[in-house]
Length: 399
Ligand SMILES: Cc1ncc(COP(=O)(O)O)c(C=O)c1O
Image (cartoon, rainbow, N blue to C red):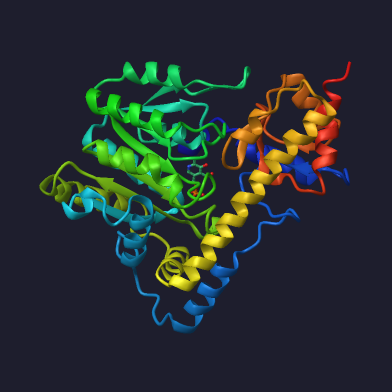
């Protein structure tokens, strides 16, 4: 029987955390697991700018006929502009295109599908740790995943030198997945000087970046966060940038994202573009319309764009504030617990540097749910639960 030989695939660890959280009857339970932004009341609300754009679409959209495999051209233009800028040299040289994809995941998938068309045996270097789908997608395409050191979870140390060393050993034509900002899962990002140094080394060695840019605006700002995507696609002749509108537009389920391809020259680019579209055609034919239509309307309407940027600023600043409050409270409650790094890191995620036993105590005794390896979604902290959480963490440091 064809369908009877499979072993069951275990639940994604992050889904397990959600299931445990939902099943808990503890009135104090806290969800620091799933990777979505939450506001001061713990809700993942629809942005006001998104609601306005949706209303505009209800009033003005007059067809739901098919899109093309490349998706919404306005979305593609405006997103590309937001990622690398209209003045990027590749734009004038006709060697860059952006394609709307179903979320950032679709962008990574189509980007790696294109890599497979270029070299079915390509090595794909993935940070350790990372967002687990990087490895899953690489493997499902039959490409060859390789790991580079990035963050020592046990010690709580960002390993830039080790990253540099590991990637220096990569071979010409290898692809390197880089987190554009707000590294998921560590929150530790390269400085601009480190990005410069890495780009120079990758150029020298002939490595190809795939910048996964899922948190634009959650680090330092929409424009400020573009440094890695810009440097990698300017200094290197070929690059891929997978981007997501899930977090910064809070449109998780609407699946808006993109893959941007930069080729070495216009002639190569024309051929490459045909392979990108053929990968789309064979995978899902064309992306879903709604999320990208909303993003295109927001980015193309100056007043609405300003309103959206203010909403992104608010989300980022709230997470930053919770990072600082967590450190402040831990410094009061357990002065030597060493969590100062939480305030320095960026985006929604960080690791709590704790032992496996301490992590289980927080989950089982205090109903604070997060990943078993210590990764927390800082956006799950609020002014209402911060004392409960920091009291529980501080209790681990009392003998
Ligand atoms: C690093 C990284 N890349 C890509 C994605 C994909 O996001 P999307 O929901 O848009 O597919 C995520 C989402 O969590 C992510 O953390």
